[in-house]
Amino acid sequence: MNKIIEAEKVGYIYQSKYQKTKALNEVSCSFEQGRVYAITGKSGSGKSTFLSLLAGLDVPTEGTLYIDGKDIREIDRDAYRMNQASVIYQAFHLFPLLTVLENVMFPMQLQHVSGKEAKERAQEYLGKVGLPESLYGKMPNMISGGEQQRVAIARAMASGGQILLADEPTGNLDSQNEKVIVDLLCKLAHEENYAVIVVTHNEKVAEAADVVYGMMDGVLEVVRG
Amino acid sequence: MLYYVLYSIKKRKIANLVTVGISIMLVLLLNLYFGSIRSYQEQLTDLAENVPIYCQVSNLSGTLVNGLFTPKRIVDALEQSDQVKDLSYMMVMMAGEGDFKEAEYSKYLNLYVVGANNARAVGEVTNDMISMEPERVDDFFASDRMECIVNEKVLTKRGWEIGDRIILKCYYYDASSEFQKLEIHPMGGVVEVEIVGTMEDIIGKTNAISTDVVLPARTAQNIFAQFDHPFFADTVTFYVKDPLHLGEFKEAMQEIGLLEISAEAMESYPGCALIVRDANFIASATDLRHAIELMQSFFPVVCILVLMIGYVVSYLSGNSRRDEFALLRLQGVGKNKASLLFLAEQMLLVLSGNLVGDLVMALTAPAFITMAVVNGVILLAYLIGSAMAYGRMSRGSVVYLLSTQH
Image (cartoon, rainbow over all chains, first blue to last red; front, side, top):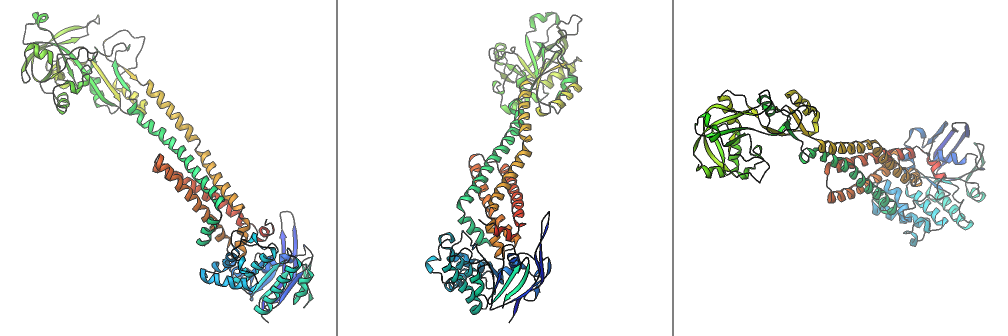
């Protein structure tokens, strides 16, 4: 299997005016395509910090994080997020002024895909996440949480990357929608060859993952896998 | 990305209307501000035309402005001065027709003769009161030809006709006796002048004494010179050429030898002082200058205010879009590009507001230079304000922005 992400003794220190806080401590691990990874741990354990490093929203203060064998400090991290890695959040983070369809078309428009093609592909992705066509023209605040999260996953797919990062993707959902989303993430990994990395403290999500890491006080350990 | 800017403008109707409305208001207010300064400055410039400063040469006590003896030296200096405009002066002689004996002067000396440099100097006569073509009138007064214009009543009474040559024995006034009384003395000979026109009798039409014969000023001066008598002007009036530089004018007049009026001075005939009718002008100019200074003193405040409005509007607009900014960043839009996106949108809205404001101004009070200055100031203020606001926003962490999303 291809190691698409590899962390080597990654550390991260939050530095404020008054104090330094070590959020990650010598984290070493790797992620491959076609698998679902769950990172579990209590609030404040450092798992979201790790996810933001994986998303290229920040860089490690210690150690090295490799994306496709390249140091994340040396790559264009904006382009990385635009073309390779997508992030979904508990709060969905859809563009509130764009319709469901336009939200999914947006990453493709950033990549200068023509309007017609972007629309066709967006409809295809929305179909894959099982969203009814009647919702395509709705604004995000007019659909349920589960539906919003499916739109967020469709938008992640639209960017064309093979890395899907999810921060508590089921945190705002009921158990029925939770199952739908978890199944969708597993399907993406196993059928579409995505590397799916989920930060969660939901046991059901962790159970569905192929590999489970546990994080405590910034230290990552393999729980299962 | 233009697609996104236009899309965002279309979707955010109310917020955008507020931004455009503020721009329109700023354009109108700033036009009002700069327009007021410009209007005051124009009024000040036009004040010289609208409130001219009239000057009269007088005696030292200021009690006489005609019947004076103003020396040739002063008249010549005034004619050459670049501080003076519309100079009018005249000198007075008495004459009798023909070469009569001096002992019989009381019988023949009955013509009131005036030498003047323009029609106005002859007791407020206007060109249309003279029976000559208007362009010839000016030529007549500027010449030194031995020609004259005769009061039409005198012409009829004496049976003269235009084109006649008449012989005049001239007498001049003298105030040089020790008692400061006027005396009249013969010039010492006769002169021959041709009648080239007539003028209406001015009795009842102006306050001046009726004139019988008018000579060009230069001709009259030549007559004085011919008989070797000093020439004095009876009346000298003029306007200040550049009232906005009154100080320089007064210095120039002092150099010429014209003194300030002294109420304590004795009655006298020499024209050696100057009455400057500048009270109205000074009052108006002072008021306008104060108004301009007051308006200009607000300029830094106005600039800061516009800058603050530009900053606050951009900051509030940017702040309300922090989530959107974070989402754009999350989708891989670089922070500079995302900031530029918001900035472009803001500038498009401000430009639209400016255009509407300009249109209103162009229809009501068009002043294109002021409008250009106003647009420049507003755009610059918004550009700085927006750059500061969006720059501040782009320095924030995306993770933090997303975690604090509403």
